[in-house]
Image (tube, rainbow, N blue to C red; front, side):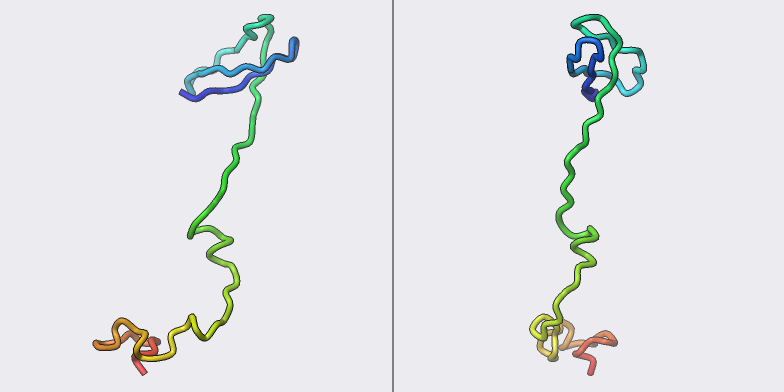
Length: 89
């Protein structure tokens, strides 16, 4: 069950309460018994690795070292190479 933060507007106390997702009953402050409001806090998310816009669509340098230019660099150079492969030429 998830834990939620609640704040009492009367006494300004913040407390955490574990509730079921289906529980929609009103929550009372344990300090003064007043009605409370749920506090929403942002969750810090860090996207790392392949599959995200920054890593997949980032401009890549055109280095001649990174592009294969000879038949030795293709793993299928000994057999039938695909069309568009430098080994097929």
